[in-house]
Amino acid sequence: MVGAAAAGSASYIATASREWVDHWWSLPRDGHVPVRSAFDPLAVPRLLPRMLICDLTEPGIVRIRLMGTEMASNFGFDPTGGDYLDLVVPERREAAYQGFIVPASHPCGMRVLGENRYSSGGPIAVETVGLPFRRDDGEGMQMVFVGSRLGSSQDLWKDLGQANSFHVFEREFIDIGAGVP
Image (cartoon, rainbow, N blue to C red; front, side, top):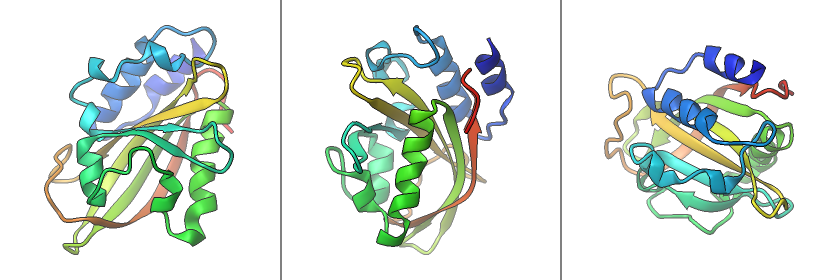
């Protein structure tokens, strides 16, 4: 399978990123993308606190269906049920929206390297890997992301205060068999 080989050859820094990609490839599918019901987040309990599940059915909205406890602690509250774009500064919302729509509509995966800045003043490098799912009702797509802090505290989520901003340094699309945009 071309997609599995391409995704398998991608470089992942965080162990959690590799675990997430491997688990996604293990899911049953008809075509390039598994249906959402094929994935049980409890099957990857170590990844669940770092997981973000977003629904892309509503035009212009990235509905947060689940945000893991460690990710939610970055925001200082649990935004589950809200629009992810409300967490983004207005001038970056369209770019952030495209960051969800492009891999969901192509379809492909996405790996992002970026930096969170915290109220404590500390920056932390982050690797996030997102992979697409078809909604069971066929009415749209969902993206499931797993994020990891990098550096000396690789894969650890220390209490640094609330995240104030996120800056994307690199975005790489992952071929899951349909090519990349």
